[in-house]
Length: 295
Image (cartoon, rainbow, N blue to C red; front, side):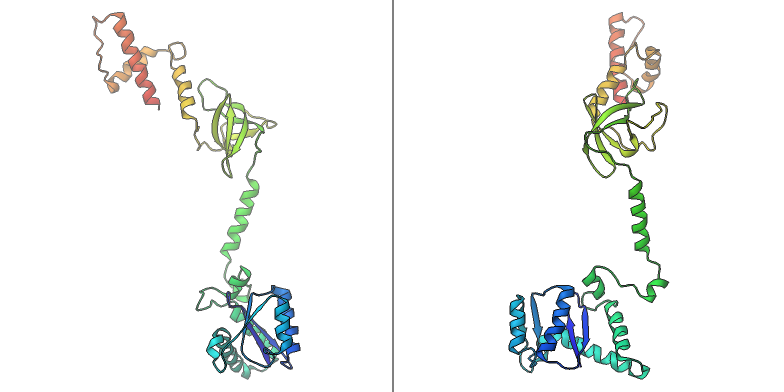
């Protein structure tokens, strides 16, 4: 005799050989199952004498389990287990010519059933019940790509550097006439590899490859690992570049403007009879156009 138990959600089966099906033995087996998997909300059973006994009802009531009994002479009321009974009988009948121990046949059947996708849920009972597929001999032949991907991600995650909020760091500086690396402070963590750093009162968004620790020796001429993240505070950087475009900072300003006239085509045309004031106005207009090209 066997006691068959099926989880309604995951279709996970349990088959327990029993010498007798008294209420005491049934309670003993269920107590063992509840110690492994926890107490269920409901138990659905047929109207067997062990399930309608008073001891069984008291056992379920003390554990806060609702007991639902199927209709008399209507097996379809407990169709989940009844269908599994038919599957179990066919499997054991098919394995009968093989000989051997009943426990061995039972173990093979349970492993096969638990690792086979169910027709209703389209997943294996082990995946639904335990959150993973059980390892079988077929798993040794089929490569586990998911496991390799997890290991690769874990190794990559360990190599990623991290910084704390309030930590003093050196960040890559894109401003003109500035040091390659400037000192700043991490003020916010924007993502796994992205940080917000404040430098001279300006908030920048930097990738972890563009940040160095203060204790780390930084060569001002060294290139970063990657330069894929621009500054978030565009307006501050634009003001800086606008201030840099002056006659003192950029040599041969007029030479640059002569080359740009072919493309800009300013409305105010410079002639030989123009006064110095008109020439200065053209220079200012062209400098403004240079700033627009830069951005």
